[in-house]
Length: 204
Picture 1 (cartoon, rainbow, N blue to C red):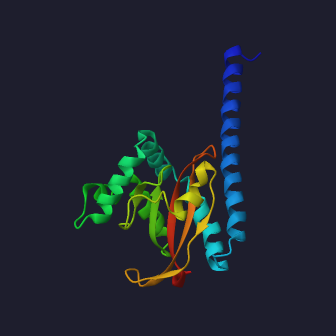
Picture 2: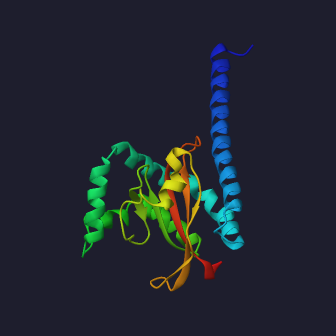
Picture 3: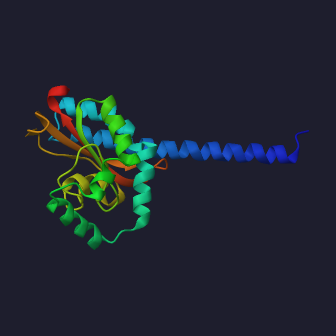
C-alpha cells in the first residue's frame, strides 16, 4: 500500500505540473492571438509578418527580459519622474548614467543576444508597464515611449497587441527599418511590458 505522504507528494506534483501546463497554454494563447493580429495588419508586408511570427513571437517570454521588466514595474516610479527623466535624456549632450545602464543591464544583454541570433534586427528596446525604457541595444532618442503607438498599441493597457510602424530609411543603419512592437509575456500569460524591434527590410 502506498504511504499517505507519498500519495500527497504525488498529488502535489501533479498539481504543480498542471499549473505549469495551464500557464504555458495561456502564454501560447496570447501568441496565437498576436499571430492573427499580425496577419491582419495592413502596414506590414508578407516578409515582415512571416519574420515576426517565426522569430519574434517566441522571444516575447524571454526570462531575462520579463524578469527585468517586472523588477522595474515593481518600483512604481511616478510618471512625472519618468517624464522628467525623458526630458533630460532627450536634452543630453553626453552619455547619462541612466543611458549607460540601459545599454548594459541584463535586459540589454538579453536584447543583444536576440539581435545577434537575428541579424535583421538593427534596434531593439524593451519598455515597462508605463512605457519607460528598460533595456536596449542602441541608444534611443527618448526614454519614455508611453505616449507613442509603439507602446500604447503593443502594451494595450495590459491586454497586449501589435503595432507596426511605417518603413523608413535609417541613415545610421544604412537600411530601411520597420518597427514591429509587441507585448512582453510572463509565463502565466500576463502582459508585463512591451518591446520594439527595428527590422532591416533588406535583410529579410
